[in-house]
Image 1 (cartoon, rainbow over the protein chains, first blue to last red):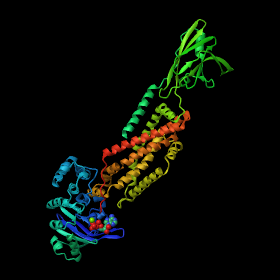
Image 2: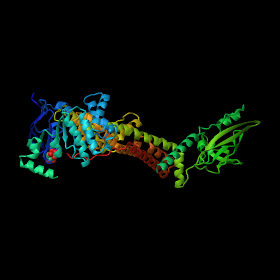
Image 3: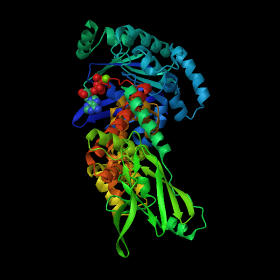
Image 4: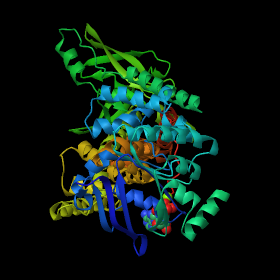
Length: 246
Length: 392
Ligand SMILES: Nc1ncnc2c1ncn2[C@@H]1O[C@H](COP(=O)(O)OP(=O)(O)O)[C@@H](O)[C@H]1O
Ligand SMILES: [Mg+2]
């Protein structure tokens, strides 16, 4: 055992001939909040998706609590029970009501009691300010509401880590705040978060560590102050100039 | 529009009931009461003759009259006189002689002529009449009643023929339509469940971590499902029906065999519809489901299939409508569904045009009604709005 709960070792990912990840190394400690920034196409989403095996790593290791899951694919479900994911497009289940979106996985995957799950779902919905929408159809919700429900859904599994892939990028500007607020509250609870985001101010406030990715490698990483105020690499500087100018 | 459909349906059903009630039981002559052997013999042996070639009319033919006929004036030494009151028939006063064929060659017999003065229209319907015979031998006499039916004949005009065909054979048409609807509906429902099996086979995914045995099994199932779909979509249903019924002699009951063929055929089409429905669900929901630890089966069962099926409902309903038309080919294996009933009806008067015109209308009413009913159900079901596919 070591102090890290998640380790990514020399991760390579090819899509056919295209090498998207070129040897990523990343160690995550419990409770750490890590923001991943970088321009579009640099491989941020692919990195997150490899961590919970929505994409098969071509080479390298994903080690969770000392277990190398690249060699334990039959136990993937155990990994996914503990590492939740929040998507850019929310990906709510359209055939289920808000509360059923929350309870389906605990009931079917963890074999939790349905009534208990519902009670828990109501608590979590309350946490994200969506309690009064519990029995609504998901398609009646705004983007920001959908994303808050999606976050609530991921919390139902009591995950140790949540992966966020640009959770506010598909939202109208006026809805970004409500989702970021929920994430900030979440950060207080000590849960481990890996966040791909273009919200630089938010990343700076919330993160323990910031990772800048460029063309499939971790180009620079450090404390938020270091990366945002004194980036060493010219590519990091260029990127920040571009995004902060807007 | 739906009012029109309702109107037509009410009309059809009302006619069916009226004509079902009007069905006559076979009308027999009442028994005669007398001690006279001669009269009893006369009563037992007299025959009625059709004016057409002087054919003998059986009791039953007296119930299907469309031409004049003759009643005997004597039998042996018994004289018979007749009375008949009807708006449609008259009985002549004077005796005529006709030559009829008997075992001893042509014999002349004395008869009264019953002539049709007015043909009932199809709207007036069958006309029952009572013919009373007075049997007289020396000073003994007895009476006997005979009942017959004058039936409407098919008019020469097209519209008359259509109306006649429709009303006279409404029961046969309705029986055929009921069978057609029944086979189509049951076939579509069974086809739907078979389709779920086929789709499961066809959408099996082979993962890198399957054992070689599991992998081989999955490949075989995939191949079978694909082959099934190609086979049933690529051959005409009339060939499938003939193959299973005449070729393999399945079930020994044409109706079961027909239902079997329609179900298998529909399954192939619905399988492709549902597969399309599955493909149209954004992959994001599958990924969300996976990321929550759900298995492929759970994802299909609880997330993807319910949506795919819901989205496929209009197309599946359409398969039902297509089946209403396509089950006509089952006539080839001798099922009396709507089309085959019509062939039978068309043959009765050699009036193909009118019969097929009527059945075309009935098919139209069926398909139109079912289509508008399904549309309503679809509106009620409130199909889900599709979201934009995920960009990453
Ligand atoms: N499923 C895929 N098939 C092929 N290429 C892909 C696939 N997913 C991502 N890519 C490519 O990989 C590169 C990195 O993509 P991505 O990880 O989504 O970047 P980011 O999230 O940083 O914008 C891009 O060039 C993208 O086109
Ligand atoms: Mg991305």
